[in-house]
Length: 256
Image (cartoon, rainbow, N blue to C red):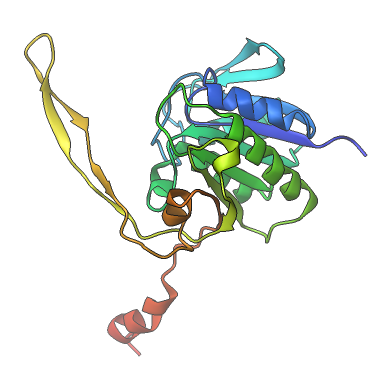
């Protein structure tokens, strides 16, 4: 049997330390292709590029022989990799390691999570990995170790169809992480704010500066697990129908 083919992507850009650490760990499991945005693409969600051409550039970095930079979004990267770059359908899509946790509502905005979502949508086992630190100089070693452990299990154990896993890792040394916890998406939220600033030419501009509120105290939620020092593993699927509201809406809108 051929060795597993693993597609690695992210939203922090192909030059990020997180994607390099992740690629090195995935090489222990199989053949790795790194296909990622050529620049920072955080919080672009599941955006696709439809109004400009996408271009593929070969990317060289120590120990990465199959690297490609795309002038698009994380979802673009996964789609283009599967349809044009890879020699066969990958056995695993791994996105990360992201700077900053992608728990709760942050999953909706995250390009890292969207890259994993795109893999799941075409039937490939997929995972998104995020470190709970925005410091670009964060130590990624513990995140790399857990990425390897979880990816190895994903390759050996099938997930339910239409499901990917969202992994969030506390910003702790490996010996201080308490273990792994299977979690649910929490109910935390953002209080959005935009700080007004003045550029050197005297013109106004705005910078997002919202406050993240952890509203869910359930120990089985992703936010609380990370806060308590556990690696959070959340199974995620996308069916946005609110089934509880169907009967109510039928009573209002059905003419029969």
